[in-house]
Image (cartoon, rainbow, N blue to C red; front, side, top):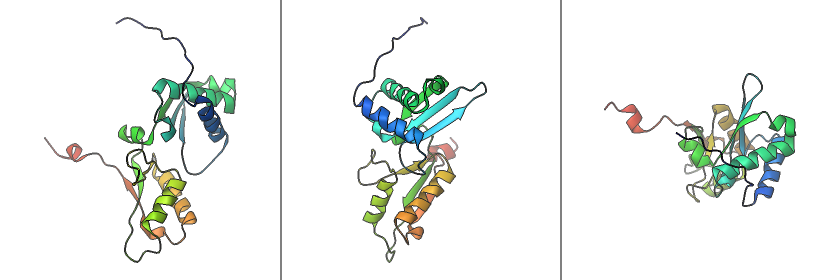
Length: 181
């Protein structure tokens, strides 16, 4: 198989705005919302970063990577950026399909609850829910149970008396994964 060298190119589409937003997020420490930024440091100091953000929807993987690396340079400096060996950008649905976000917070509204479905949807949107799969059914997805639980606490603080309506679930694969063939 031949080895093909591809030249570097600049990102298209809103790149400056996204670089600035992501750099701001890298400098801050929000407890909830998008983007979700996961970093893994390896022996020797190399870093793998995955940025899960619905803002990537219309961008190529190459553009996403370029924006992530530019944001790291802006937020952390070129020395830290040089440690980033792998940078990936995925939307929430892409990361969910890849099995990276197995935990989900959903609503279980019952007659007599002190909050409405519309109030719950708004609160979910306020804490970073994705609507890429369905505009009317926001999804809150997470890599860990701790992240999901922290988001439920934030939802309850934004929507008092809503504790009973929030349910945290974990994906366990499809039915085909559990049925012997």
